[in-house]
Length: 334
Image (cartoon, rainbow, N blue to C red; front, side, top):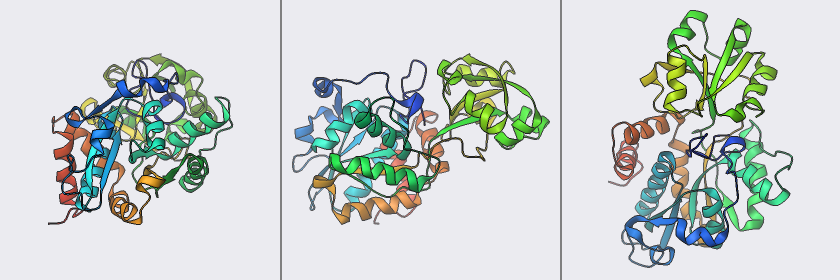
């Protein structure tokens, strides 16, 4: 259930709840919202002899959203598909409201996605904003619900892997050591009063303050609206102004602030495991699924943390970070 609008919630992810965009973007904005490597249009990106290599098996456009992790995942996808014999290019689109219709139309062939977030996005697209949630902390059930919603739209959901990027809560290392905290259950049992640095919607979102109270018995005294995972929010916890910060499981900057995640041992958060989603007609071949499966099965949450850190902290280019990772894991042919 990561978050979406960058004003309060980093554009990083769009899982359900906070990450869902505040408004639907009309289709006419699609062309203006698309930016390609080298400035190519969607049509140019899919042409033979594009950016990705020989393309003996044809051309594929990989979609990416406008945040670091999605860009890195798109590079990983593009490079393993290129290695499998496809001509690949990447299209960066700022948000799901823009790229999901493009995926349905076949202008984009494959997109790295998050199971629970996409399930709830499609759920509300079909059943309205007050639709009963279909995602849960169970990854198999969540993916099954996603498949039912995606198939009628011409989308094929490929298997999910162990890498997961979902909401998470962190405390300072000093606070954790002093109170012997490793999990959110530990925090609840400690009977400590905590103030959460988060977006202001944390006060009402079931996975945030209400969920912490109901599921873990945590005594939440208030929400400090410094945003989700922002430097200001983390600094507030580091300084002891707040005790808990809402961030994500792949946050690569926690160590910089002396923070550690508390385990969501009762599974309050939904299963936002990373998985590929493809246009069934354009990219439904078994060869594509097989190429992506090797990556999906290998990639872990910690791998994503490290990849995010390389790009955001070390300023390594997404393509270079992806290539280094794939070569280290033996996922590219020599």
